Length: 101
Length: 477
Figure 1: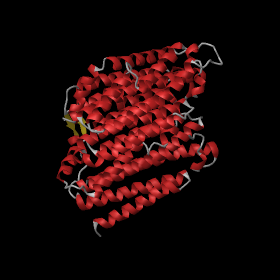
Figure 2: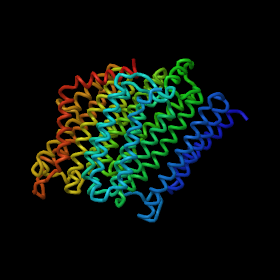
Figure 3: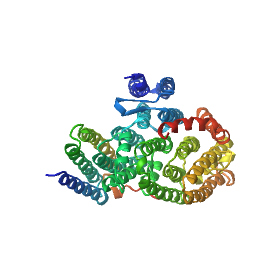
Figure 4: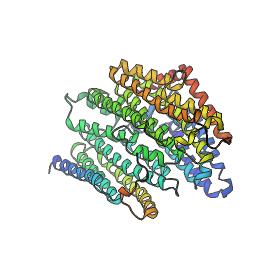
């Protein structure tokens, strides 16, 4: 296994995440796709730290911070989505259209 | 290590949690004390910053946290602006929002995040403080619990904001992977050693970082969230988003591009110039068609981001001065315009441009103050907007972006048109309801001070320019 394998895996996961954000219509699934993107970043960071920065392993430190931030983000986003669901019993982002230009 | 240099941040964090705790013990009818506690605290933090950070040029935690005149300038700016936002929020929060304790506590936390952001000397610190800022704002934007518009704005903001953070992080991971470091000065040193043309992975990282920050500052084509979020958020939060967050992101961008990415200026200069051209044109053209005043001001602030990005593209000491000066001039003018919108909404509950008909008869002071703010945003002489834009445009022209400056001037003329539509409504169209409007004393007082500030910056900017040149000296020697 070389660094390249991990980088390709990370790039593929990231691309799937971006596709999910753009193509999914449910707010929860969009959130899930964003999580996928963040995990792609984590794989990239940890692999880079293990192969290219073995002394300081900054990448692994960043990954821990990213995991923490991602958890907080999901909590906050789910709270907002939950309130949206109470208002109109749907989490479809196409229904969220009071404001449009 | 000298912990006194970190004292302002610690004090502000203590203040934010203090406000949350005090809120628990205050009976409902005494909640009005909370903004005053916040204001006194902010003044104290400002005094601490000026007392302990003045003239310092050093760093803490091995370069993670920088203390220099650049960060001091922006810290003072954020603290003063935070105080003005607290003052403008008072009546609005009392009338339209529940849970004032959480409102002011989270507002203070977001100011802390901005202060950390201007001081960060490393990508992870910058990212964490950016997330602290964004999280506080997600909550503030969706703070009006009963209002479906605020809820919708919060959802759009958090989904697109999280997406932007992921892009930014992926960019950071590539820059870290290829250059082996996340410190700004180390990145700059590593970039100098790279052979040209640059490694595509570094370029990808750079592009993703630009895209991620572009989302946060609402630069076209990453601006889609801004109008909806600005319209749906409670108006004081909108003012805060338009002034504070933009200033914080630009403070980070200025430091990042001058201290870290300067050796690769050939690569990102063109991208930023194109983004700037796109942003100012889209913002100003779409603003014409708006009927809601918050939405119109949202598009106008997107246009202003275009001018500021132009300054970053032409990065030089003079351009950095121009960007900071324009952030200040735009900040005062926009705050005044939004305060006018808040005061009008507090009394009438309306926020469409058509609702402003005959305001000059109903409240001459409010109409005059809003006209001054809008003229300043358009950049007419004697107002702050003219002086700061003049400085910024001159710097960009000297940096070789003459075509961009031409476009910016054309856009300023376009912007005058939609600002004049509002002023026409206020002065020429008769009101259906002729009763006099009573503006609250505090709101009116703050608005008066802001109007004076607009004229002061417009006519006598010399002391400010001196302070800004000192601040720029810290990042671009």
